[in-house]
Length: 295
Ligand SMILES: [Zn+2]
Image: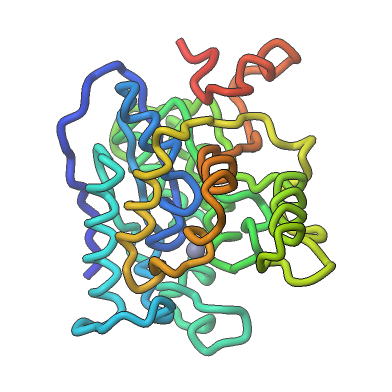
């Protein structure tokens, strides 16, 4: 049975709340650990909803595993939630859809086959519960195109509409989200990382000469960069909590210290929607702070 409940922990009450909606357990740590830790350190209540159980993940790190993958990933997610000092974590209850063209994709409970309104209502219930000013999800491309990541974006957009709609079939008072952002991997920075690694004779994840190509987010679309190098070690711990997915020998932890600090100490975001018009002044205020302009 999916666990729809949430573990509420103590958190300082600043009235600020951040909700991340992520398709699989580990996405929150890979995409937003710095921002979650940095926000929690500033007294923001941080909440994560994980849409699927990640049950089709492979044992990428090659650990010894006594548990079936779905149970393993629940244990890992609980450890990551602790490492991230989340105010709450909740499971949305869908199944991991696997990669395009695999039988897992056809499963009736696969997230990619979910009814948009039904899934939107499930997320919207969490929006009304935690009343975030800022919501983080994938972008419309699903960041790297995985069907669950594309669905994560669509469901979050729908949930934000439903949470604000007084006629929606939902408990709790309507809630308007100030800012919906997608986590971004700025293309220019990927290109620079690729060049740095290649110049030093180290292996680039983008292979030989090609570089990242059109992977990542065009730099012009990136609105916010959260700089929090002091949380880079915390991000590492949160990523490693997903033991079957991220090992010590992972690419992320094996580039030179200066590059690790530079590239792992910052997370970038693009705007999906905003409740208020974002002119030049508002965008420049958002450059380093997702909560800029929030009352
Ligand atoms: Zn994922």
